[in-house]
Image 1 (cartoon, rainbow, N blue to C red):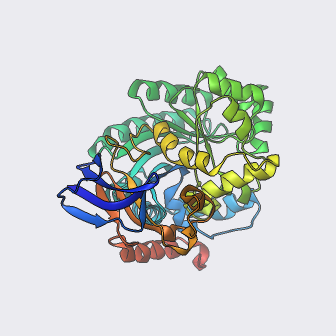
Image 2 (cartoon, helix red, strand yellow):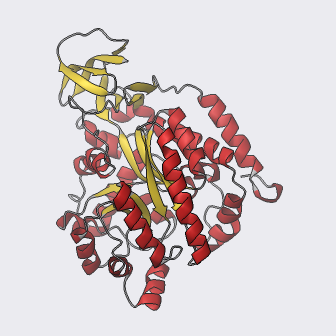
Image 3 (cartoon, rainbow, N blue to C red):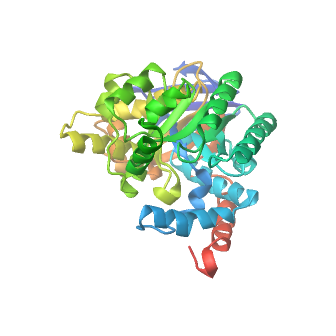
Length: 421
């Protein structure tokens, strides 16, 4: 499969871009024959975005139980709903999430949720990339820990049936749901198989207090004592971290994921410590979290929230510029998840999008990156390509009507006590 894009805007000028198989192989003035030719006039080409933290199938819970206290929301709404989910439900919920991500320019996401194969199958069919992490929760019970270890090993072996677009990852939920012994096992298994670890870290004040009470250590200190921290760890949220904890994270080459919209909606009470994290050169990217706590999967919105929060919190308009947050959500994020994309360059994977430069939200075009970060909505995105295949053209994704209908049916069925979502 080859794609030729003619007269498209790239780095200040119009040019042609040619992709063959799943790589960008030429950028320049030549015209080349291809299986698919696209007129890039009035469009700009950019790398696609990365969503660093999702629970994709929770798209089924969008708008369900909003504006409730956190623990009530979890115990009365989310956990009872999740108990009803089947693999087929997760499949359709993930397809809905994939559809939303394609339409908003995301082609790689880091996911942690139940029913691994439901998620993986949906990602495979939708043509996206994902780190699909098997949830690991043992509630400090040895029998549960043993069964979870066996399940992780089984799912890792079974994950090889999928294409290279899908990476198997390990998903220990958090300090308060996974025992120290299990965390040590997860680290060893991940190092042996070179697997990413997806983990919730220091998201709430309660988590900090419980860790201090149980171990007389802060969460990062406790994890360090277990030898859990490593370059394969992607720790999400990390808003309640002290300077000494950041030093430990830096020394262990841990990557972080900032989820500004989710943290705001759930009343987290702390702001991601971007200046201190930047000073230590700790790698980080941005995520949306699940639709139950956000309520969308738009990385365009997440980038804007991330940038504005820092400017507001520190009263400094220069913090986390549009260019920096854009690089964080593209090139740097792809690097965290070991995917050779994130830039429009020869040799890179053919994961890119075409943006409509004539869309009202992109006019005037004083600075295209600033427009994408501060102004754009998913409607500005015309075409999305992942792994050298067109997933969306002129704003249309094949099969989107069926996905919307099926996901709506699932959401209605799992609604509680006959009520509607």
